[in-house]
Image (cartoon, rainbow, N blue to C red; front, side, top):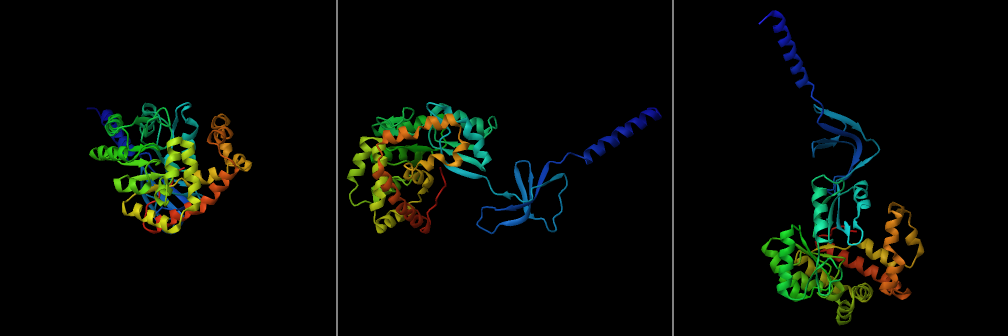
Length: 365
């Protein structure tokens, strides 16, 4: 090999070594923000959060901090850093509108990085979940119940209906084979159907949540339900005589919801505490959706529909909601809204009793 070739080879080797020693940063240090880590401890001011790849490598204070190698510094002074929030009750698809694209990036904008999709058309909801989790669509990580299980006639056309325990088991099998992450039952599932669903789900180690109607919360808890949406079934379990509420659930969804919502106001605190204790002992998680109860209690106030936050919702979507038409279909009158408002204090009391007893509460909208 000639001298010039030796020199060329040496130069190439040196350049490669330099390149290896000067690799691009693969980490980011977020410097100067206030961190709330979600553990219940105090906020950490003037913090440094080092992120490498998809993991948080370290969290500390700026004082005495040494920037790790291959880490780029980003000044985020005056801002806040929190763990990604989880919305435990969402609907990412709608039978008429399809995928609610407008909502996906808004979740991220508000810090919600994971959602629990509690009902949608079976195929489209699971395809959306897969696309989100694979990074093919921008939005939060998603867990999906796909289509919910309901009695016949189903409240929603895209639900899976059953009127016999054998049919309920088949519905569970269908959802399992489709790839649902968990199961959701709806208001027309009675105790025999619920027992079959829970028994079948148990064979697949799959959790079941419920928006209860024809089954009260204590019966569902003792049967093994994992979680309850909207605090449904609680008035039915706490009432001395729940026959009128069950009768309303049989008539229609809105009749059942109205009777359920109104009934809270007349419940005794001792009976609520008894139900709360039963749910805690049976390890039931509550997703109370307090924002829903509160909003429904104030829909007779025009200011609610003029809230500035609604500007974040596209106008076509707001028109599709058609709140005046929903109120008309529900048959809600002034006295219903007044009763809903009286019920709010009892709903909050029950949730405090449940949490004080050690119950787990998940936030959902």
